[in-house]
Image (cartoon, rainbow, N blue to C red; front, side, top):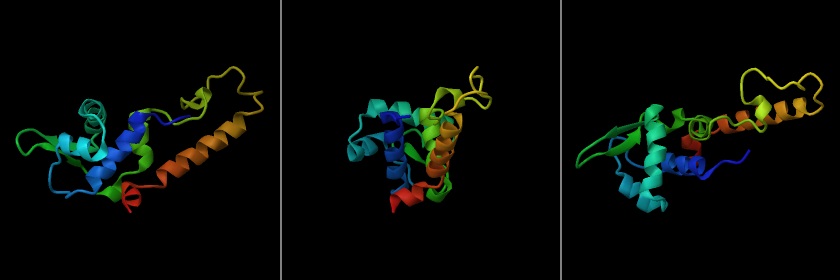
Length: 133
């Protein structure tokens, strides 16, 4: 498993918003300048985060984006799952039911299951507030 630029940039964007005044909407242009990420790429990421309810948006001269909740209410794992999809290290664990024909005889399945458990526990143990510190 490798976290793509979309996932990494989503975290940077969310941290940037968490560091701003929570009552104000922040323009994408300002975020782009601070984070050195193109507006076009940020638009793709923002779309995912708004659709999932993590961000609020408004249009107009004072328009922009802000967090829907307090920074301590956002788990890093949730942000990564929205932008990356499944965080499983192997494809056989991507769905709730393992459909692999070798699952009953696979000597590595317990290893991959354990690794997945550690990954999920780790990314879900951090909040935006933790990363802002």
